[in-house]
Image (cartoon, rainbow, N blue to C red):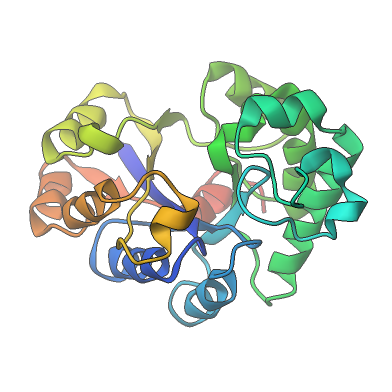
Length: 256
């Protein structure tokens, strides 16, 4: 049987994204979301999560957008002259100290836990855990938190499995930009065999703050329209695809 996790990345990035993800979870097929705890709209996002979906929120570990949770002086290899994260993954990883990476990511986890929520899973902004240094740290955190992790390819899936960390069976990042269409979504769902598939999504409303922090703008509203369409939900039923969640994956796979 096919089981589908639809994760909305970037919760907390802007109020418009928070509003869109709430709509997608309560009215659409979004099953999970991950929050960027260092962003200005994160406090609002965590309040929304506590009220509406406390068991379907994970942490979008972030080292490439905005200000760090820690004082920039404590993690100088991760930030530029203004004290902000480097926007490009390549530049970051050329400069970053593994010890400082772990220090900041642990601070982000701690900030999430201080909200009173328990994370359902972990993933990384800009797929930073494709880098082996970051993957090692994320695996350590996942084991400590007892949660699954997004696995983008066979190599990362195999690595996390070797660490005792669970992941979905399949992953797709193809519902994005011009590919965020109903037709492409159906193609993604038809292309994988039985098991659990995670589809990464980025719904949002284009508020005044979005263009200041992201180059991915108006496509977010298009994604939301598709993810909340009754036609999509009907299509899932016809294809016998069950909506699932990372929290259910954790229980099903025997992590508890």
